[in-house]
Image (tube, rainbow, N blue to C red; front, side, top):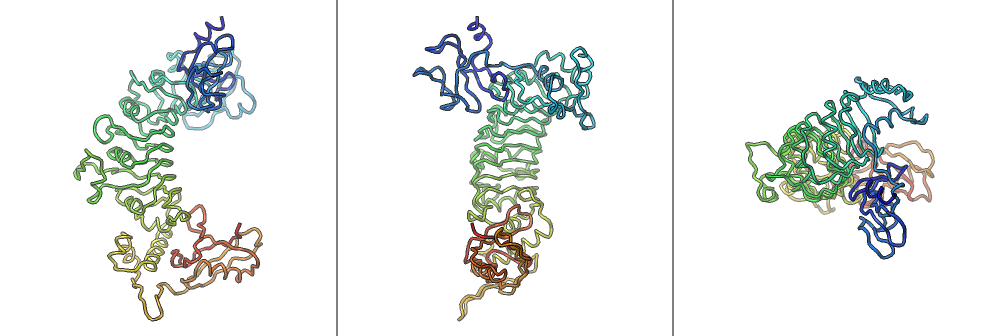
Length: 538
């Protein structure tokens, strides 16, 4: 009896969860006997990799798990094939709950305010269902939802539902998604993250009311996205994080077409390494935000006279048509492998780009030989938000002046050579009225520019240093980091303490370690009013 029931209840490819633990989800890869053991076993490949083997037992292979220890054999009674969406809603909002769960139980009213749910007896089913009419947002995450239930009940029970979170359930068939959206006409935001969706997308209806679709960690590739887009004429936000996407594959032309209303595309935490793939998104006419954090990009470019050779074969740039990324305002590139200044300078060519994230890239990490925040601000003419922090008018002015003085102090050669390496140098020098004095070599050796005194704020932060009032000192611009450490020992009367210095920059969340003993204040672009933190060495 148990054997026949197991074969009936579970099929290959089915999504299941461990009985009593809806968060432990896996895929059925085998149903049948296991040598040396009686009865029928279900071979499961667990999503979280928490199994016992790779699909083999005692030298016999029954299935191939995705890793060495993600598979296990389980009795049918220890697995659940899930519940319907309506059952999950009843369980989450109307079932027996603990006091702690009741405190967190609420619905969102039409005015977006929390309305506490009053739990009632099962004999008052009609009264309970009537309360669902107030529900505009619902979450049934990790409840083991595997089917829709009777979809004819949706419109009656949930007439005003606008947002539905189905994260971490057992859904896999796109037909179920189509049914849910069709029967919930007010639904505009749907989250299907951590549901392993099938690659076969057929018979999907037009989801005209869906404006936000979240498909993070669903194993979806761009080929499936191209099929889905025909069912999403009104989608404004599309989230595709964690899907191991490495290529953008348009269905017909070189660039992605359609998605006429798409304003935000989230491709964070994927595997895209070539900017040419991203450029295939350049003709999305409504695109304002592009999230590319945690990919594998090493460079960026924008097509221009000197960049045509970098465009992929088959792409033609028509100046009279829509400019690439014409409406893009926000580009998040944190956690990539960008390390060249040309990539930074190319961001100035994006017509409307003002919000940029570059943190956790080698080029933006002074500890890896990158450039500090003030240089980034100076080189990026239009940036208003950098790494999540607003660039104030004062910070921009100070950064640009520091940058110009830094360039003037470090580089020798013709102005043409300097402008080639620093495209905004002449513009900024003239804008801020800074006279250019070319370094000259006389009998006494090189004369450093900006050799006047700089007003520097010094602040002790080391635990063992003790409380000491901050000091403001006027120092020559030629003072090196090593010399400043010695001066701090004298200023603060510190003995037998090895020091390290940090530059505290406006808008930067963390201070920058000054680890080059020979670098001068001018070399570092330090100007009047700069704060340097004095800490003890580890």
